[in-house]
Image (cartoon, rainbow, N blue to C red; front, side, top):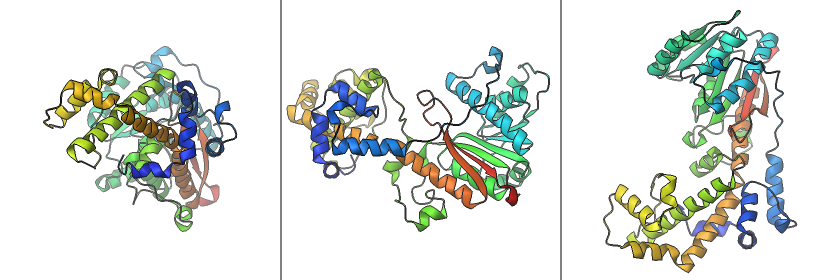
Length: 393
């Protein structure tokens, strides 16, 4: 939207025309990264195939899951439960091999992960978080959970991770005896985790990134000398935002809702441009899904009210604007461009994580980047597993 309509010129016209000839069901398949018969043999199909191949990653070899009592996951959401069930046995086995002494969980919140690692897998854990309330809540909850034979201790430490004023305390925790864990460390926090693990020579780390749109596109990427020396593309905020989005296969209902939301939001910006002479993209924020399924007049009036923009337009005028045949064709092209652009999100995410992995290798860590979680349940499922090289200890 920031450079519309010029931005549409960068999308191959033949691709837009091909997608425009497809049914809604066929577009849904493509949005779910499935190459259907209608596009076989086209340059767009070749583009999709190349993207799919770039996204192939090995699946982490999962160790045997230990069956835990239901009480172990009391208060734990299904997504978090799935993630813990996958990584806990892996970390237990890794501890036996690498002989680190304890886990440091970055952004541990109330400490569900640390508790299960300690109480059920006998791994001493330190849960770090900057929110003292969550830390206190986790400490109090810990008293209510049953301990089993052989369980280890959980320690809560309130630290604003990466803040220099806590560096002395962090040094006591981040040691060669520690293995650091960042389960969905947002934005640059993942970079800080990697850099602190390197500088304090921890035994290793397991990092899952998220919220790449929070990265500073100038200072936070790339990290590795390899990317810098070989002049890899510098991603802007829009590329980082695209990398952040969930790219798991969606339900048809979710796809239909996405289409509706895109149409309304694009139409809103075009209305602003044509009636208020505002060529800049305005952050209009989200709204309840039911609003998008109401009339366009109700949607745009809500947004104008939130933005404190006075107007004299009637409901009829708003709805006629949206229903205009030429506008609908324009919105269709914009949505088709979005489908093309959407294909690249996962590639961008992998590129960011590869840079982090190479940076760790450049600093004497053995690195493996794999998929850990069930993508529909936990889309940010790519983990960077790094262990200190033996000759670097």
